[in-house]
Image (cartoon, rainbow, N blue to C red; front, side, top):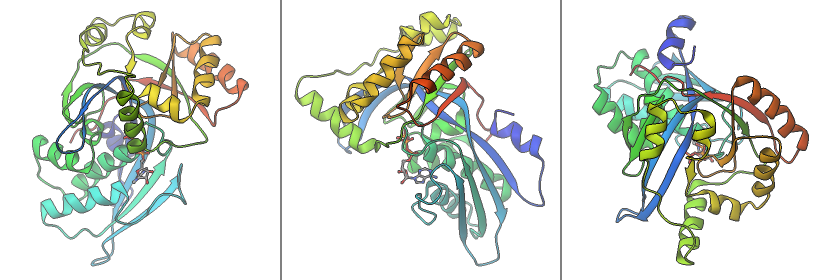
Length: 315
Ligand code: ATP
């Protein structure tokens, strides 16, 4: 139910359709390093896939018609449906690799908020790769698929893996991290968006003013995951070097975070480049109660609950 691999089987095939669910990503640790020669920031991050899913469905298209894309749900109407969409790019890239005609109808059922720091676009790219791989029976190894994914975006390789993983390079080098632990989150989405490049620029601006540093030590957090640490302990180990920048760009995030803490969240954590705010709960029940209270305080768009890690696709 939670992994792309499983849901493919669970759903079966409607004709020749392949449907996959791909989880949003959060970064329990997001360390932002210096800008590299290629203009990207060096990252040390711990990724985790959570149970907030986009569904990517692909069907064979009319011969010679190319890639068509329809979007339903979050961002429908605003998101590009042409070559700029990451799901479209992914299908095209895989078709080029496999030397097949990219005649495919892609349908996105989006639940992951757009530009919310949850890597929804990257999840769709990963879902499109996995679904088209199945649709076209592409024989491609893990390493090569990772490489295609990395060319689509820093978070795409992780979205292929799911689970929990350490990300280095600019986030594209992914090492799975084994953990038996599971944590419950409240996900407070925002009426506004933050573009990731905008947030990186703000990180750089703050650093020029001596604010913030590169958190590159993830040892304690990795140990906590391996040892199935209690949520109370995990709460003290979450790090986001982009948080100050996100709050600087959207000062109202500070009151959302503060509100959740007042309502009993173990900690408040900006998701990636924001503006989504995550609250760590003790368990599923605590998460539901906390979600209700956060919603009642207002100032947010939607309040959801999610659990992580969830498994990723079998590529
Ligand atoms: P990240 O955390 O990886 O930086 P994000 O969650 O902040 O990502 P996304 O939702 O992935 O942001 O989208 C960022 C931008 O990517 C959008 O503003 C949109 O223009 C573009 N985009 C292209 N394809 C998609 C897609 N399938 N879904 C969402 N956004 C897409």
